[in-house]
Length: 110
Image (cartoon, rainbow, N blue to C red; front, side, top):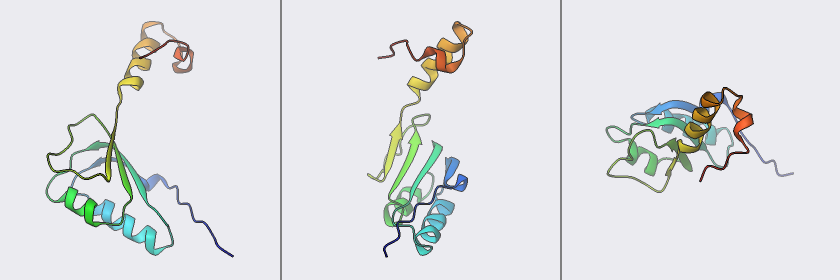
């Protein structure tokens, strides 16, 4: 019987990716435990030192970061940046109209 293993753990979401040492170590350990693919998320991508090289050579499939910081000059297809603009727009509308964040869903934000 084939088992599909899916690991969703709070420890796979970081505030920031700096040197990617912890990210690489965690990815390797999750795959040793049977994870087929490892996707990691972080709020901010600092990407200092050899972090991009570690990610490229490591076992992580994809690293998602927000666009709160610019992408490094040297980058890899394993790093994907997600815009925070729609979230910020919702927060501004919510504050402006003094409503709940869900109440702003009917406003168009192109």
